[in-house]
Length: 311
Image 1 (cartoon, rainbow, N blue to C red):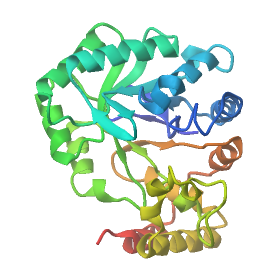
Image 2 (image 1 turned 120 degrees about the vertical axis):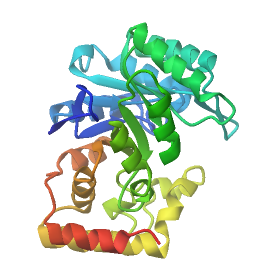
Image 3 (image 1 turned 45 degrees about the vertical axis):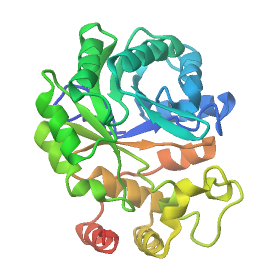
Image 4 (image 1 turned 135 degrees about the vertical axis):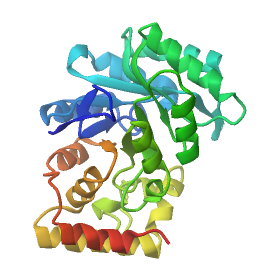
């Protein structure tokens, strides 16, 4: 798998990163072990997680696999702090106290004394930006994090953070796919100008770009469950469905899979350092890691961009 630099930094990560939002939830330890092995054998390097994933249990699961499945030095680990969920309600707190307390708890669960990349997980309008940034700087200076970044900031927020910080921010995380091209308007120009690399989450349109929802909703899919259906439903509407059909047609003509076409398009976009995949099962991991990830013919890429252009 191709290794890429993140923004203007010297940090190198794999073109595909392994997202762990489903770990300790839909994905148990046995499946997580197999997924991680498949990812490493396929040339993957970066494992992405967050303190908010399964209330920290995803981080603990990663920590339990380090040393047994893969050594700490073989992988890069990125995690995030500043967000929590209680009774179905999301809470954002990027105060210095919340962030640094969260980071120390993450390190304990992961069983490591540093993470390669640490993010403030969301913009917090109730906390001065300088305070949030001071926590990121302290993590760098204390060696708890090798690099730092921002997650789910919009364009002007990212530009302001990069301009105010007296230290290098190297990465930004945001949702980006053929079904969600909003970052192209402001975020991508902002992070490119600031020298940040974009780590794209939900690069397969929350699973919809694989084509598995074209004819029906699979019984074992997220869209079939009341708790997770709202996450997928926006991409099952007529306009996104037309994009999925175009991707499927392109894939058929190229002799490739829809997920391969979708990821290949994304990885060729400006500013993208890595795509964060989130397979819930070993089968899904193997399907994704089998993708060619080679650049699409220009005429195919243009056709997909025309049909997926935001209204």
